Amino acid sequence: QVQLVESGGGLVQPGGSLRLSCAASRNILSFNVMRWYRQAPGKERELVATINSIGSTNYADSMKGRFAISRDSAKNMVYLQMNSLKPEDTAVYYCNCFYFGDYWGQGTQVTVSS
Image 1 (cartoon, rainbow, N blue to C red):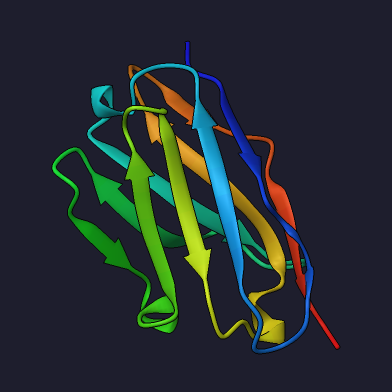
Image 2: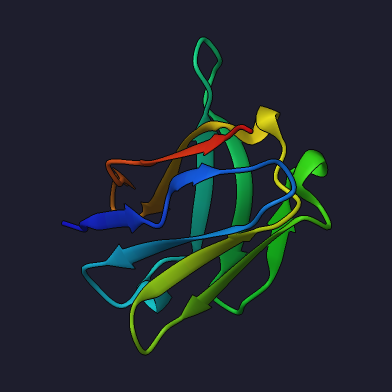
């Protein structure tokens, strides 16, 4: 069993920044990959960024250069730094990992609006 808890969402103006956090209940290096997804109203869940056990990262094309995924394995935390936010980034953001099963957090709402 793995519990994932996201935090850090909120309301931000276009062009602003937020840092999301994901706290895992066990050593994140146990997971091959950790991911951030998002789901906007009326849309399917989409992959935002991934970080693997050796620290390699990947991003969806629309997030490259604006978002950065990182981790602190000593704290079992994964982060998503989001810069230059746009209204279309408005969504619920979810942390995900696979460890003998697929685990999701409850999500954190990000709203980008003036």
